[in-house]
Each structure stands twice: as C-alpha cells, then as structure tokens.
Image (tube, rainbow, N blue to C red; front, side, top):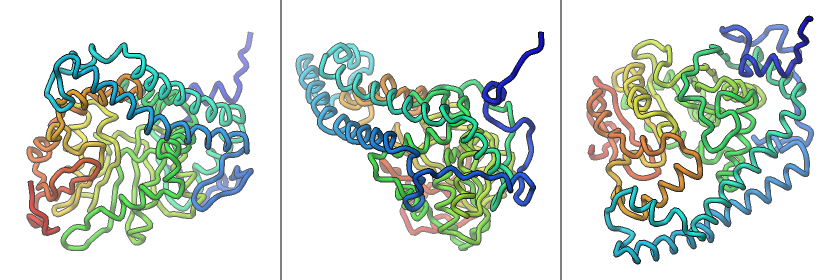
Length: 402
C-alpha cells in the first residue's frame, strides 16, 4: 500500500529546513512566490500578532509575568531569607547549593512562585504554537518564499545539530532546532520575556551601539554568534551600514525566520545555519564578533570552544564582544551565597535552563586570557566585555584592563 505524505509530515521530518544544503540567493523565481503574512499590519519593526485574541492573551501574559517577576518573586525571596535564618544562615553567607535547595524546595510560597512561572511559560508557548501550527501551510509558504529572496544570503546545512542543541530551553516546544516555527515562537516569546520593552528591538539596538570599534576604525565584516531571530544582526547593520554582517545559529528555523524578517525590513544581512564553536569562516575573517545571551545556553565544553573560535576568526586587533547574564560568573561578588543559590535553582529547575549550572562554574575570564585575548573592560553583571585579538593595541578603548 502506498504511503501518503502531508506537507506537515515532510517538513517535520526534515526539521523545517530546506531539503538540501546550500545558499539561497536573491533574484530567483522563488522570490516571486513570496507571501507576506501581516493580517494586522506592523507596528514599526514588529509585525503585530495575527489575531486580536492572541494579542490580548499576550498582553495578559506580559502583565502576569511582570507580577511574577516583581511582587511574587520578592515574596518568595523574603520567605527564602526567613528559611535560611531558621537554619542560622544569612542570605549573603556562603553555603552549599545542595543545602540551600534542600531547605527551600518544599516551601509553599516559593513553590507558588515557581509553579506560576512555569505554568505561564507553558501557556504562552502553547498559544503561540497553536497559531503558527494551526496555519501551517500559510506560514511555511511564507518562509519558503523568503528563503531565496533578498537582500542578503541564507545558508542552510541540514543535519548538523549535535544532541545538546536539541534541549527545550525555556520550555520552548522543540527547542531552537526541532520546531519548524522556532524563530516565530522565539521572537514573540522573548518579547514577552522583556515585559513588552523590546517590541522595536530596543535592547538589541542598545547592545549594537555599545560594541567598541577596533582601534584602527576598520569595520568591514561583523559576525553575531547565536543570533536566534536576528535582531542584533539587523541592529549591527544599521549601525555599520557599509559592513558585511552575518548571523549564525544552530537552529535552522531560527535563521530562516531571521532572514525572512530581514527581507521584510529591507536590511541587507546574511545568515548561516552553523554552530558557534564551528562557524566555517576563514581565519582572521572578521573585524568584530558579538554574541548575546549565548554562553549560558550551551555546554561548558562548547562555551569554551566558542571563545577559541571567536579568537580564530577575528583579525589582529579585532574586537570580541559577548554579552550574557553574568559575563564572569565565577567572579561575581555574590558567587556561592545562599540567596544566589535560590535564584540559580529557580532559573535552572523552573525556567529549564539546562546548562545553567555549567555556566555558573565556567572560567570564562581564564579561558579568554588563555586563548590570547586582551581583556579591555572589567566584567560587570549584565554587560559585555570587549576583547582584542593579538596584534592589536593593548588598550584601544582607554579602559583599564582586568
């Protein structure tokens, strides 16, 4: 008996990527098939969610997240402090992670905060997924038409994803690699994470504006590692319009969506489906390499290899500017304290940050020095730390090195 394959089953079988590896270049016949889905138009750079019901749910979800992150989190941390005190421990005391979790894990107030966060996260993903999968053919046709459209180039390499990249971080269904609409989900989901403050890519524009320029002023080629849905890539191109700008991500659905969004915005940037630790670019190719919240979402081994890869593909005097939650986790002033353990446990266990504990114990500053970078800025929480590749001036920014 012959088998009947639906469009959905075929796309799921190949992970939502193109059937064959290679470049999609603008100007082909496929570009004429582009179907731009904007049933409710756009608000600046953001395409509105396609239905008023989904938009209303997103408003509710955002407001609820603000309450959870604010009042409910403060109440849970106050309760954690009371529990610690009952064990003769101050929040700022250094104690073991295991003891801290054992003391607080079963408290109902702390459990309410964790359960509320997790349930909200699950419902948010399901509402978004219902829209995109419920209209599978229309959204997939839009992606396929954009693949070969310009400006910019899209390169897909099916089947390169190592096992560690398939984890469902943040409970995102299918993770960054397994759902054909991972880019759609991530973009609107992270708008919710930012509590409605990044609808015009404000966060990424600010980060792109903070990247230091090499001392010689030459910015010809830029790479953003772990680019997800491409917001920082387009922001970097807008700051450096004459530069060739690339974004890479191991999620093929991520870079497909990023490319489609850049095409819609008319921004000439390029995307490659690739690992940050194995980019495929030549030695000394880039003047600047950036990343944003990448290192805490990969294994410790991958994270250290990413630092080495950034060093390899930067030219002498080029700048590496990674930004993450804690640029130097092991150098934090609160490293190992009881209250930090409570927060890290919530992040790892209830926000499903699979590699969070690896991230907290990885010596990035040591690795940065070992591979040959010169650190130009003291690592501070929530900011990047520019590094200069060998051959460049020791301190082009006039900032005291660590």
